[in-house]
Every structure is written in structure tokens, then in C-alpha cells.
Length: 210
Image 1: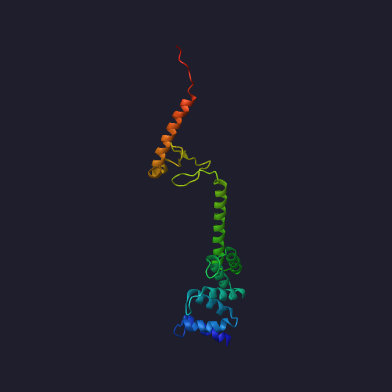
Image 2: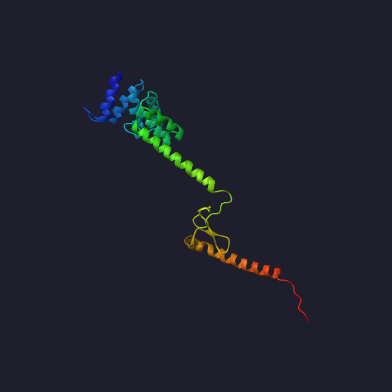
């Protein structure tokens, strides 16, 4: 009876010998899946994931994929990995995604092997970016007033004449001029007055000879 159910599910799901009917396929897959037939469980999981013959339900898809994966079905393990990777019907978890990908990959599942390589590359890029950012950007880092690029030992910013802004180059300065010009002129005037005051303070008070 169990084999009969799965055969009927395949027939109605794929259409060999009968008119394709995904609702009937889901019915027969369900009967077989509930009796612990792993191939029916993964097929039913796929139907719930895609919404074929049943209303789309990612949590039910996750349930049936998990049961099939626990029976060591590589395709189910890979599909579970994808759901955890993307957060489909479950909280996103790269750690759990990797765990299921590794189980499928150990059985030679090509897509799982490829998924593991992609995770490795993504994590390597993330670690590099984090290390680079932390070594360059600090609380005292100065940024270009236009493009927000940080000043580093290899990338020096140029001061605006008003001393209140810094730029990567003339292009950044020109691009920021419209937004900065009013403040620039105000600060330039203040700097000019401050310079004059400093000169007066430093000028020695020499008495004229009579």
C-alpha cells in the first residue's frame, strides 16, 4: 500500500500514464509521507515550497524536507540548506545552512558542494572587509566631505581653504561646492578677522620718539 501511494503520487505529479493532477499527487504523497516514506516526504516538501497542488506553505515544506533529510536524502538536505540560507519559512541561519549543505555534499550532491564554496567565498570577503575597515576607520578618521571616503595613509585628503571641509580631489570639491559655499564664505570671513586680530595682538607697542 505504501509503494502504491508513492507510485500514484509520482504518476499524478509527473503525468506518465494519467493526466497530470498536482492536487491528487499531493494527496497520495501525503499518505505515503505520513507513513515515513522519505521520497514522498521530499516530493511533498517541494510541492508546499512551490505551491503546486497545495497552498504554498514554507513551514510545512520545511517540516517535510527535515523528515526526508533525517532519512539521509541528499536532495532534501540541500533544499533545507537553501531554506536556512535564505530564511524561507525559518529564521535565517548560515550556520544551519552550512550544516545541511555539508551533509548533502558528503554524499556527492553537486549543488550542495557549490553552495558550500559560495558560503566560503562570502565569508572570506566579509572577514576581509571587516578586517580592512577596522584597521582603517576609527573614531578619529576624517572623511571626504563629498563622497565620504576615509582618509588613510595611502589616501590623503586636501583641506578646503575654510579649513572646515576636506576632499579627495578637485572633482569632489567642485561637486560639494553648492552645498558648502555659504558656510565656506562665512568661515573664510571669520578666519580673515581672526588673522587681523592676531596681528594686532602680536604687533609690539613701540613708542614714537619725540
